[in-house]
Image 1 (cartoon, rainbow, N blue to C red):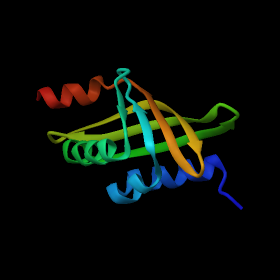
Image 2: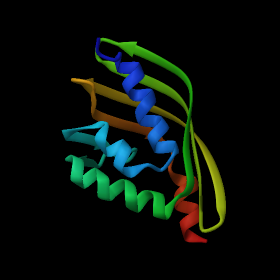
Image 3: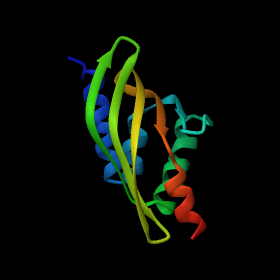
Image 4: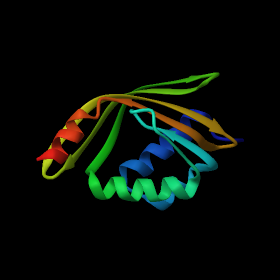
Length: 124
């Protein structure tokens, strides 16, 4: 029996929190789309592998805390917090995510968060 979309997304988040780039890349469909909080779209498993490597190098201790998860026909919706540390400055922001799961893989991941704390830490 196939895992539920929520289970697939939880496994993806576990790999994000472990900074396991190879593991999280395996969770992605080959045509995966990431839509960041500014609306930029990144497509493809290899593009995202490089993107996550760069993000983890930039944002130390990055992690996602999920407070609520809902599986809907249109996808999985999550609400929680994202946190990390950049240039020695720790930050935490409320965040929400939307995931589309197809054939047991995350086909789309959209982030809704205010990235100003991250941007401010990079200006230090």
